[in-house]
Amino acid sequence: MLKRLCTLLAASALAAPLALGLARANGTEELTPYKMIRSLQYVQDSVVLGDHSAIEMQRFMLGAIDERLRAADPSAFRDPRNVDAALVYVMSGGNPATLDLLADRDIEGNFDSRVTDALRQYLNGKGPLIVENLTKAAPEYKNSRIGPYLFLILGNAMSQQDPIEAMKHYDWARLTAPGTIIEEAALRRSVSLAAGAGLPEKGFRYALNYARRYLTSPYASQFADVFVELAVAHFDEAADGRVSEILSFMDSARQREVYLRVARRAAIAGNQALARLASRRAEELAGDDSSRSQVLASFYEGLAAVPSADVFSAAEALEAIPDEKLSPRDRALREAAKAVADAVVRPPFGESPAQAPAPIAERPAGEQSELAAEESGSGMSPFGQPVEASPGRPSEMTAEAEAAASDDPALDGFLASGRSKIDEIDALLKREGQ
Image (cartoon, rainbow, N blue to C red; front, side, top):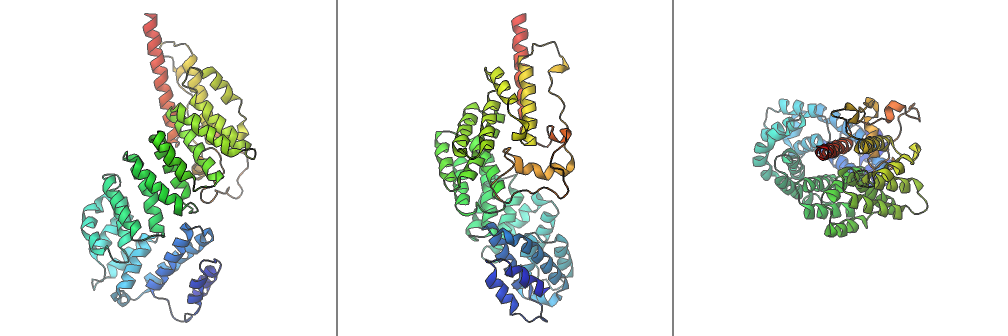
């Protein structure tokens, strides 16, 4: 096991010093858990700082540490460093069953039952139940090795019921663990909470800090999604300047992707001015080398015009876009827009079901994971790692797979908005006919 671990570590330039240290270890002597955890932390921090070659190494190390913890003699946990190592392991994506095993074996009281009980509940999906107990216990660990992890988890657990307080816990976690996976996660989640809590200024500050440090993280695509939500929900003249400042840390491809996502969300939300602005900026960034991005920008601009007085021209412009230029999600969105446009201009006939959009077909379960990479419709997101096609997967999707997906909340919102506009128009026409 040690030999394989050294080989994997040596594969990464960032992990060369770590590999050298492991290679010096006696092959017959098992590494202590706390030394292995230091290696895992180094690797995980390397991943969010851009060394994506360490992702496979991270998976292997989690498995190796799991074996080591399970095989460890209970006396090993008289050393508080090994106790902390076990807790950090499970809070870093490790096997929850291993914590159960270690806690049940602990007859000497080496583990703090308040912490282990809270983590066991959290890892079993009962996060809200741990808030009260962990809020009391966590301050005692503020200056310990596990402190940043506990505050990150406490923030996660209370993010729904008290986002303001959750952001305070995220702040403590990231400020006590700068340059680590803890800071990356805390910043990314803080942007999302600030957007939902109606605190755009805080959200833009968090987003700026993230953009300065972690754009090469494999989780940067999730950041782009929450940043787009923040920008669309709170866009005004002041926010435009903040958005431009944050985007200045990105290359042209990432800036273009963000503007395309903003244009898509704004078009669906009915914010025509923002959809047009973002579409035009995406077109400017596309230049001459990305006809696909220019088509998408035009598509989202046309989509925003569907609820306007220029609905006929908008429908014609959408129809003129070739299918191959759009992702399955955007093809579904175009079909929904066409259905809304047709219903808007069709004279009402009582309660005719013909006014309702066509039913939405379900996408096969195997395609769900690929949808996340196609939020903007580009299918080529420069954030994080690109999604690769599954081996043996046909290059062309079936017609059913290209239909609208019921798991797309943005599409559902667009349809709901369209139905509402249709109802308003019907009511107005009926009043005029009386």
